[in-house]
Length: 370
Ligand code: TRP
Image: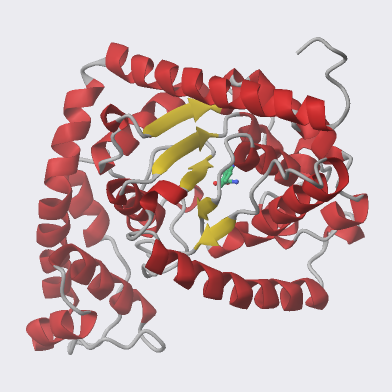
């Protein structure tokens, strides 16, 4: 790996300062959102690299549903181009986009409300065109410093870094700003990207639109939900084979939970520091049952790992049953799924065309044609 892509102590320091500031702004947002949902435009999304698992569901998707239901307009980008940052095949992208939409619909994101839109990156050319002016607002040194990009390069074991990997944080700024998104529900790993988006919005306004700013400076909305670990106690991720996916059957879920790592101690107690695997299973029961992990532990007492797993299987399957039922129904109707995507793309394009016109005008590039 090239030396410049190694994570340095100053990256970590910067990250933690950003985290503190973002946390404060995020808390203020959580308070204002229920009062003034109409003020907010939410943009978030993910790469279509595989089906959603319960880590996504409890970590980010549940929050999106919560915000949507408060009344905010919600755009979900399915970042298909971004798949090519760390791999060179796009073979399963289309199938993954379809699966992602099924997972969103199953989780309760609802385009029928007229305020929630799913769109694929590749179908909104005017959004992508914002990348060029935005590139002029960022230095290569700033791109070199991005800790999340460095981490992804490390995790994928890349020996060469393609220019899409290097520049995708700018692309992500375009994803957020094309629709004037001002709230971005993301995990901590995405904060460096959001910081860059904020810089781009400010710099664009200062340089090209000082009297009538075009872009909002968006805030991250951080989750107060606990991090869900995989069945092996590591970060839940498809490549580790430790996930419980929304689309699994109840039997497959039972099997995955059966194989989950616990420890030898018979007495079950909530001790995240010393017993992270058991704590993770307890938290999952707690989320599904609306209890505290401590109360769940007390209920199990000396029942051991076996009883904990049986309880989790029962509670999680009951929690997921209505979602899975909905998912199965939508899976029967490919035409509906396509129509939802088409409508989302249409709306995203309208937004992008309007914004691009404003951008061209501000940059003295409309040449009397717009
Ligand atoms: N980078 C995000 C991920 O890997 C996906 C993403 C693309 C995104 N564009 C975005 C997230 C804009 C938030 C806002 O999951």
